[in-house]
Image 1 (tube, helix red, strand yellow):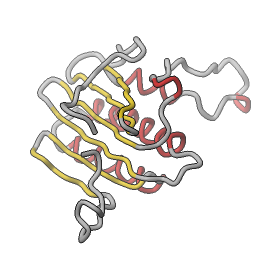
Image 2 (cartoon, one colour):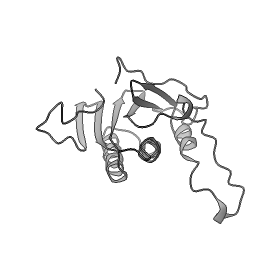
Image 3 (cartoon, one colour):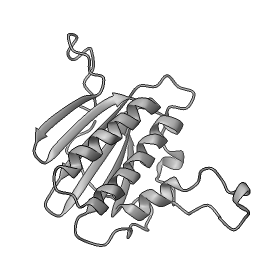
Length: 182
């Protein structure tokens, strides 16, 4: 189930709920707002750092996670009533898999953007404000996957631990798999 709700447990406030399944799995559900996303990213980065990620890899994960979650908040829910975002992290000896679930708009073309960097061959005042997010996500992660199923978006990011970063060049390369649906 992507995010618990008031319907599943009416006596509990599920805002910013963190569930620690075991030492290697962490889930966090939060409202799709800038403030909640910022707090959630900081919480996840802190928790993952405490689980032994190197400082450099933890920084990579935090940047890619921030770009991905901010895309959900700013684009998937643009003009819509914001709902919730669920992030699930699974730490394995050789990799970290992160799943990000939301019910916002699907990615254009139902695929992860190619991640070509915006051109920087111009004067500083003429540089674009955006256009670097998917490039950064692809450079910092080992694999990126996306699917839309039953009204849910699921973005998967894989970070190989101990290996080189930034070798995710092929669009829509599958990464982590989840048994069952959202």
